[in-house]
Image (cartoon, rainbow over all chains, first blue to last red; front, side):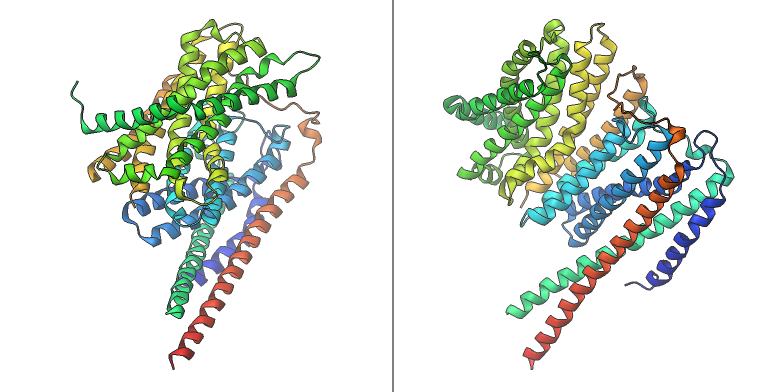
Length: 218
Length: 229
Length: 93
């Protein structure tokens, strides 16, 4: 693991431990009361859920063009994180929605395309696991379509009438709400990089193992 | 008409597929029958007191197209795999995009042939006044079909040599084309509204066209990149 | 070929941007979207605390579970690597 890993991991852990305290001190919201505070974890998860398929898509494109295994490993790692952060987003969202909107789920543009993006992440992982040889390139092709879905998720709330809060909410947050939010965003971003690093290390070690098996046979 | 290598290759691929299909009609008949069975199963499942629900027509039509499309894609590329013709095509000096577009148009033709029977069937079973606005209907159905086929042709071609390809095609294809299917369903539903709103239908049609453009362009690039071995 | 690829990628990006602007130019008409109507109690009656705590438990628990799972996988592969390396050394003698 790189040198910055352990200090960063410690920092990240501390930030996550502190975050509930910061969030508890933030004020309640006028129409939603206390439950909106789910948002301090829901939104950073959602942003990571949007970031991961973009990383996956760009890495996949680079892999298809250059053919370097490092790009492929990064794409696979990012796909796993898509599924992880997608799950967190799609669970915390409905928990908030149940209270704020009175319903667990609506089939509006953002939620539907988010669910779709999550399923594309699963499809990538299933393909890597069961597709046999050559599935690295196939999965890269699928990842491109997953990446194209992301801007659609993001802008959909602005163009369709939907009960999901639009993207104008974040820039207009008052300071007492903004500070804990950006703190959590930074914590999640740091976690994202740490998880990517760990997952990449796993893939590199697996490749080393394959080389060793080959060397053993010789 | 000056036939460029692209145009000539495209025509050759398309003509081959159409010729094979016209002679055997195997995929056309099986796809059509399967699609009709889908519609009937849904109709029976949703029947209440001897009458099928009228609001279900749009969704059922597009589900039948999606399922039948998967079947058609699988069978078409299975045929290619058995004779190794896809490999032969890729080894030939044909430009790759021409191969992709040729196969795409073949699949679209197959699906449109199925829809020609499917849409009247849905109209008949669900009392759906789809033919009130035939040009809008044609636009929506064609737009959705092209979007679906664009991604489907790419993925089916990519999976030709993969393990578990039969089950992997739906797993990969359906999430990606869900936006297209939704737009198709919403557009078709808009056509069935008693107070017809052309602006609404136009919105969904424009969205379908956007998907088609983005998907076809992306698929062209990906086909080139993935199929070069 | 590289120029064709670059052109394709550029077309996709421009197509995506054009799509967004086109959609912006067309104000969306009111859509009757399917919303599940359940016998859901009025929002004020659903207690917020269990939902809030549940959400945080899910996130922290999920992240922790993933990290633990990842460490385990990494540890297992590293063990295999060490085993093979010592095996190769042994045979090399």
